[in-house]
Length: 130
Image 1 (cartoon, rainbow, N blue to C red):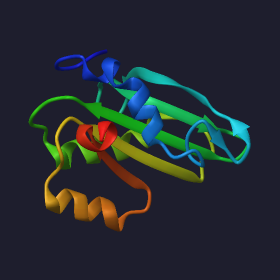
Image 2: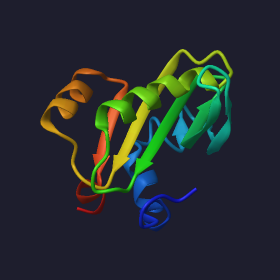
Image 3: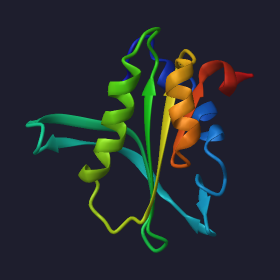
Image 4: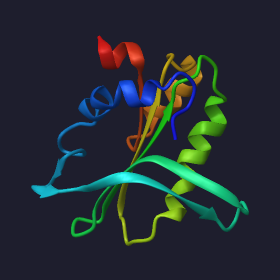
């Protein structure tokens, strides 16, 4: 689903360009499956969706991405939900990376937390289009 002003659709090619090649389209020489995921979250007892899912089952690698194209988001909740969505994807993934694509830069505190976590990547629109 598109959210806000539809920025996810307009900037989709820029979003995919921000995912490094070693993580994105080719991961260890293997072509990834990619798409969206939506379905029931049995723990939260509600519907859930993940904007970007890329996997390489032979290499046990998974990438989950969330696109937030609003001026204001609850950054802590968005990051927590993104990481929590890992449990919704079945498979023996030993390497999981998370990407948050945001319309606006996140707070310095959120960015520091992401910088300290090698699995978390946050990219804002200005960086994507810069």
